[in-house]
Amino acid sequence: MIYLDHAAASPILPDIAAEHAARCACYAVNPHASGRSSEPAKRALLLAERDLLEGLGIPTEQARVLWTASGTEANNLATLGVLRRRDGALALVDAGAHPSLAEPCRYHARREGGAIADLPLDPDGALALARVPRQAVAAAALVAVTHVNNETGAIADLVGLRDGLRAQAAPATLLVDAAQSFGKVAIPWAAAEIDLLTLSARKIGGPAAVAALVVRRGTVLEPVLHGGGQQHGLRPGTVDVVGVIEAAQAARVALAEQADEARRVGVLNHALRHGLAQWAPPQPVILSPPQASPWILAFAIPGREGAVVMRLLAERDIVIGTGSACSAESGRTSHVLKAMGVPTALARSALRVSFGRDSTMAHVEALLQALRGVVDAY
Image (cartoon, rainbow, N blue to C red; front, top):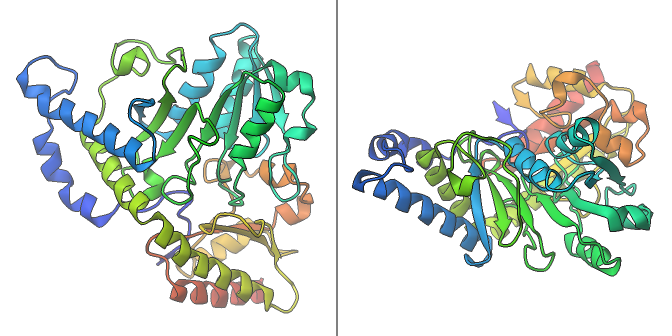
């Protein structure tokens, strides 16, 4: 099978899988318990936090890490944790944001007396802060954006966004969903003065049920879950020590090889773009901007339903996506493409290829050949 849907999930690294059983035996004790038996687990959690922050270039005295069970949980804790601290709080949310970032803000506006406003996208997927009314920017308690869009790979100019907020004297907390940039595209924590950063281990070959919320010191959150005092009282529940160790291991690998892998994957992305450009009608339309993350390429084949093409490719053992895996079952047209102004008919033809560490030029060539056959027989 050729797997080209790594933006949805990436297979766990072989070294991590091989060591899993031994780690489970080694760290069977509750890390939050008192007594000497829990000390190795406590030290392992501290080491994992240090390694993650240092790998991201974040001074350890500047931030702390809250471990969660998913990126969705991390985004819920970050959004609601900020918004619930102020009555009527306004969230300014990236119009192309992942549902786990946008939906908690909508819930807060709908059920808890808050408010929400869109941070619109330009046709190339760039954030368009200049199109937001100044009063909305000034009133926002939270600005929540995606660093790398999970459908198009568009990279948000976070430094430019922070400069724009500063120019309008906006006091908002800046939350960045970095699920698709973690270990793939440099995250400007310092330059963009990011306050909250969410990460997912499963996108970089780590365990599926471990994610993280990096919190800048001084950023105050309300807990979303209740029932324990773990993790500074902000995320109650026993931390999965083995999962955290494995997430930190995956992060070390991804961050150490980030630049080299980006160059290698960039060659594959260029080859796919070039191959699609050589087609006779129907001419594919590239939806990802030229400067998008090399790990993701979105395109559409006019007149062909993306979901149908995806299923036909799966019958040939080639796996790609049509957009966000979290929304795929709903059958709705992409809100990201709609925000970019892509016509509905073209958006329904959208496909997404997302590369991983095991992707090769042979995979690109096989995809192009199979795709041509599927489209011709459609």
